[in-house]
Image (cartoon, rainbow, N blue to C red; front, top):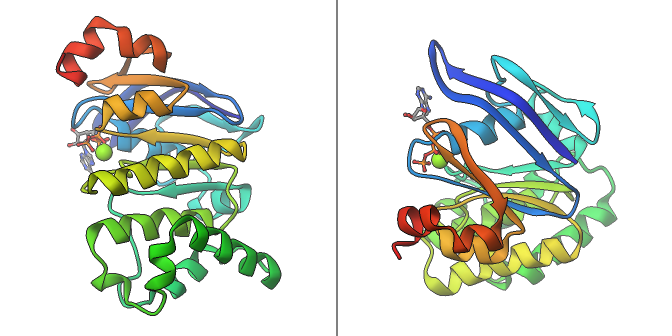
Amino acid sequence: MLKVNHINVAYGNLQVVWDVSLSISEGEVVAILGPNGAGKTTTLKSIIGLLPPKSGSVEFKGEDITGRPIHEMTTLGVAFVPEERNLFTAMTVHENLLMGAYTIRDKQKIRRNLEYVYSLFPRLEERRPQYAGTMSGGERQMLAIARGLMANPRLVLLDEPSMGLSPENVIVVFETIEKLRSENVTVIIVEQNVDTTLRFSDRAYVMEQGRIAMHDTSENLLKDDHVCKMYLGV
Ligand SMILES: Nc1ncnc2c1ncn2[C@@H]1O[C@H](COP(=O)(O)OP(=O)(O)OP(=O)(O)O)[C@@H](O)[C@H]1O
Ligand SMILES: [Mg+2]
């Protein structure tokens, strides 16, 4: 479904991602792990078209989408939930969700999607009229994920969705990922919560200093000495 071929990505003259290749099949949940500054967010931004690679290419369903602007990615069925969340703080929960469906013309479909995300996150339904800017950190995270799902994506890129969440809300996030998997939606997840992420994903890539240091099934990585020592503290 997604193929990233040898991308090199830089901020101005400062290259931070080196020769990264990823290959993700439809319906897979794939993690990108690694320490702070390893280039995980930069890789996602490059896939989604926020920061086109200097060289290399990105293919989605066999089509070259390298450097496509982000709004075209939404139409193609790719959603990105960034680390910074980027909610419209002066809009209500409900309005934020509607913004997520801006590429959809069919009102019935928008209504169905609203029902769907409200069923996933009942807390958001309770808070429909509340301004996003006054929501708690965890609620904002849920809203950002829900907004990403409003456009019926087939591929969802989540950058640290569990960051700052209470243990119960971390579970909600991972249950949502399970739900997406059951609907054959493909998920790429960047996480610091390595143990839980490896338990919920099929495969993972480990990035270190801008490069892919390892990739394997999540099951194997959970047993790997380097991963245990570096990321699991065991
Ligand atoms: N806008 C920018 N301009 C210049 N350098 C940047 C910019 N954004 C990120 N970097 C640098 O690129 C490198 C990779 O950053 P990136 O955000 O991709 O890391 P990350 O793996 O997502 O880290 P974290 O786990 O802390 O989110 C870092 O050294 C960072 O300082
Ligand atoms: Mg990051």
